[in-house]
Length: 189
Length: 76
Image (cartoon, rainbow over all chains, first blue to last red; front, side, top):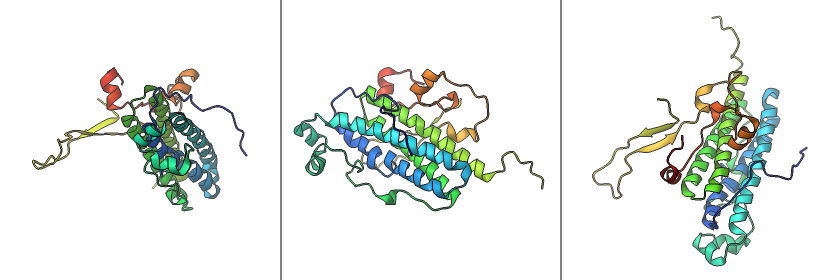
């Protein structure tokens, strides 16, 4: 069960009307390494993983939904008042024909989200290594979006999200160490 | 000096069609170096931590685009 707080994890500010940025940001909404994939991956894996790291997957999976909400807010702000001419220029004309200005779970190239993006191998180490890789890929994606963006307020929010990817990757790495269980043991051979 | 920004110099052919990018960069974030987080590391104040996205100074490694770097200069 979840308790919902009706506020964003970090304030989302967008300073320029630039729907092109929405096209890039949608990668983190419905892309392979996006926040939706992350949330669903972790919250699903936690059933078949040792007790010690279930809480971590619950916490991080929940936070990913908070990130998803931030990305959704950014995309919405960038597109809600865009003219058809602007949408065309931004390459969002095909999106408009299909969805109007509604958000949709697809990547920057318009490919719809699929469960094939996420894995649940049932092997704790394999799953956690996938999670570490997912965080590093999301961190890289944020860097590429920041590189494409000239909106300082938007970048501020993106930097926050990227920093969280770093912390999540660290915690997943620690989870692997916990499962290895050799950390404080005196090794006598 | 330690940096989380690494560089390499890819091979440039005399027959490349585009002007070469001589230096390529990539990021090696601080989580790669710490292993299991030791106790009692320095923290940001709660207010700062909420703004920066981490409580722990050791993990704070903000990324700025080349565009931002050129216009503001003195980031990190």
